[in-house]
Length: 190
Image (cartoon, rainbow, N blue to C red; front, side):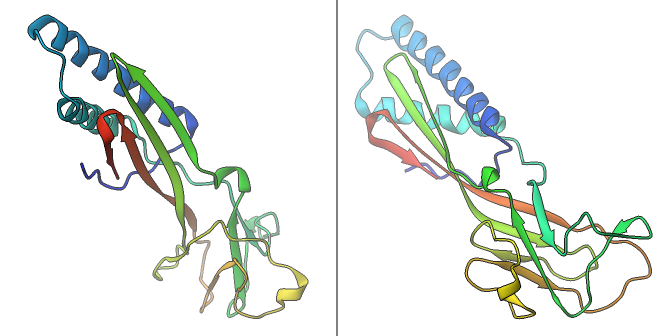
């Protein structure tokens, strides 16, 4: 099984771009086999070709921009023109449901095929105040009155700022994606 490093996918179009690259490389490989070989490639050779093609497609997978994330208290609340949060109370953060879904696409060429699946696995919040990032294994969820001031539970993601800053900080959210693929000739990889 060929191992690919973890990759991040920006959106469905990037998966499609990766598959177009697979298709292009697979078609080139098939033409090469036809022009220079008198026998058809074995399943093992086909598997190696698909693995090579998927590996070449890695360069088409683009790191994502930040997800369309939200937080509570709302980023729409402003103090002196900047969003704010409270010190020593839980800030809940989450990603829009539309950004947290599995993307799958398949490409076929010259008798070869490959299916690439991108699955979101981690939502990371970088607070921007010099503290370490925190992560949770799902999209998070909005704060509700029932949450009160307690630590986030039931699929919620949270962070506590511990000190007041003298100016604004820029926090970010990042989705980590796990890419897997399978292809003709019983080939697969991550």
